[in-house]
Image (cartoon, rainbow, N blue to C red; front, side, top):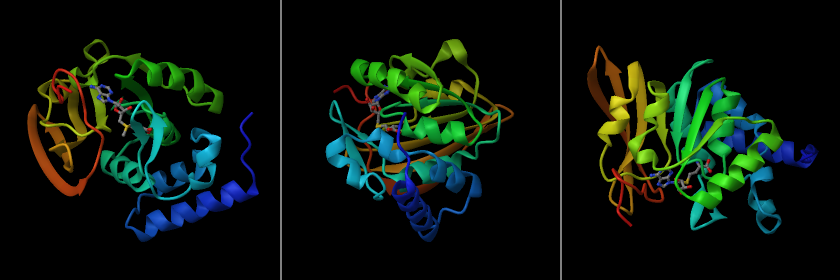
Length: 216
Ligand code: SAM
């Protein structure tokens, strides 16, 4: 059983307030972040940093995204209860947990075998049970398509056509696209088969690898 004490709940409430100050206003996102015990995703050595608004290493050269980034992407994704969501880049599983708290039915895919194995074993211990997949998410997850929402949590060089192809009608894709240093957050919406694009701020993600991602 993971301990979630008074101190940790207090730090989590402070984090939620900070995210509000930074402009996150979707109550469903704030409530979800207020519920997920972020400290449970941290090694003992980094435990004191769990509720800082920063990204942290999770091993295998990968990171648990900054809470603001998770909140921003979750807000833009506009998840409704029952939405079928594909997350690309399972990582620690924190973002998947937030989406589940928002009522989404989550499919999550990870390209790093060790992280996939670790998170598939760990996340259900917290009560979060997305559908886990191992593989190259730059190609989406054709066997389970279409998706109401697709969320990419690694930086892509281009928008993979496989992902827009796997969007349901009225579906939405949130993806950071740019070079290896920084990426612009894009929202791509499909309506009657037609795609429209909205652009937001720059972020800095680890690279999306694979067939329609970076080659190394
Ligand atoms: N969503 C994660 C979380 O909540 O902890 C953070 C994700 S981390 C910033 C990016 C993840 O994308 C890494 O775990 C990386 O291994 C994974 N990744 C990179 N390329 C991928 C691909 N083609 N398919 C699936 N996952 C990929």
